[in-house]
Length: 517
Image (cartoon, rainbow, N blue to C red):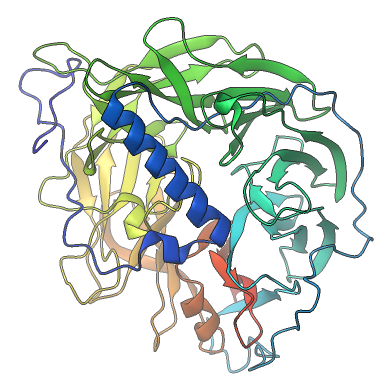
């Protein structure tokens, strides 16, 4: 499909739904080589199943909820217990040590930093580092078989909770009162199912209830699951269903499966201010995408939305991809048969089309070229939404640049470009957070020059430096550049996306910069 059709909600003189180019991306390693061994298999299994079902035209391989309706156990995790994460027979990596004083030689005005060192004995393959959470002056991170909290001010470890097996998914946000639910593997099995849930109180640093998910049929497969939290509800999306539980006590709330009409199944879930479910629906010829808002307490569908052709008013064979923002709702869409033929749309609070973004002369990569590792729909760098503005990192026009070198601001009401940042040579730019009508952005460090955090005003123009990074932390920053990042309370946090047990030296799992000295 060379050009996507236009939705009917737009006026006849509106710009066509912009096709964001995905071609000529910088060379990347194959997806499987960048993933942990279990995730390589699950992505390949999902892809193979999807291809087979589409070929025979008999169904859709959809990922979604679960049926874990067994009574929740109330086994509290003990942060004082030794971690069960050590691999028997493996030795701690020996090699170059991390800097003892990461702030050595700081120049005037440069931001002070701290780092957290990985203390687990990781398996040989790449291990995924999960979402960052912020609660009561703590930053919390999940890695392998532990959930660990560090003090935001200085990086001191506050507590650590061991888990029975490796964590396989986490939600992007905790509940308003500071609780999360993580998913971990079947203890004793190194790969395969992701079928156990564990609630953790982040304020207390203590574990709560545990639950094993039921796997009664193929629709309840736990090869891949995704978690989303809205209010006191955690929704578990898996193969073709989505189940919801109360975070506080694990009580089952509702289950979403195949809809009575349209043949739509849950494929992924997104949480935060609202609970969204992304469906796959089997059309006569193609798989059709649907997005819907769900009441997090009752499971009642508040609205549904599918892309339709403006002229024919027929549903388009397009799927919903990554949710850049839940409120305001900004989501990527792509042709069912061509994920590289994609665009971004915004919906209003009632599930009506607000705008479709017109990139004009600019080109973009989905998730700023990070690819899709099989993680949830909300794990996507490169896009940040404010109340009325959406910021998206471009694809660099320079083939020698490693990543996006500009940021484009879109008006969410019209979909038109408001401004574009000015490139700084080949330096990479990524939007980090919207602050009022301004944007906080990350100018990535290189192998020779440290990065910095800047603020770009409502009308674009020259950025103002907020945090200038120092030289001592530069190697750690450069190694972690592809990971997760966040800006909270005047501090910038940068985490590696993957850590390997085969590395010969010590590894930093989290790096943070604070206000300039």
